[in-house]
Length: 164
View 1: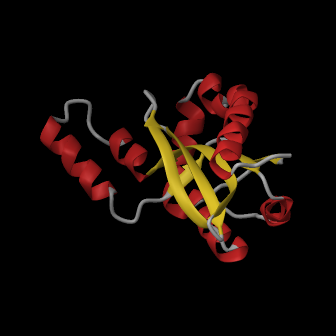
View 2: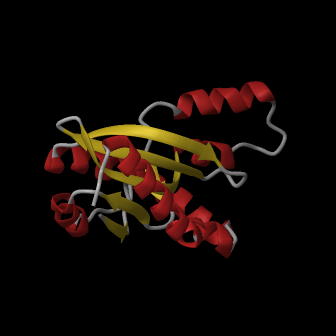
């Protein structure tokens, strides 16, 4: 079992990389929208029907960008309109390193060498988040990494019947 804390700038590209380079089927798990409009989500990757990796990301996306651009006096109709429009071609940009928990060592090497750049559509939104979010909002996963690693490892072992 391994834990990697990896700087990822484009979450969609990272997920595509895991599918393409590692042959993983990626399944989205739990997801939450935080009060500041950023989001936290988990994903698991399986190969040949066996779970081999799980990761979590704290990120902003096209919805965050759409909401931050709304005027303060926007009504519910306008709010719903921009959120529905934001559902097309959603980009996701992590605001802190992604935490990866793996059960199979072979998947660690490609993840460790992965490198990307932020989605160009999200550059302005990322700058806004970095400038406006309090420091605690930019280190959310860092403060929870040991708890996440323990719980994810436990979940993966339970799912696959892993015995060290």
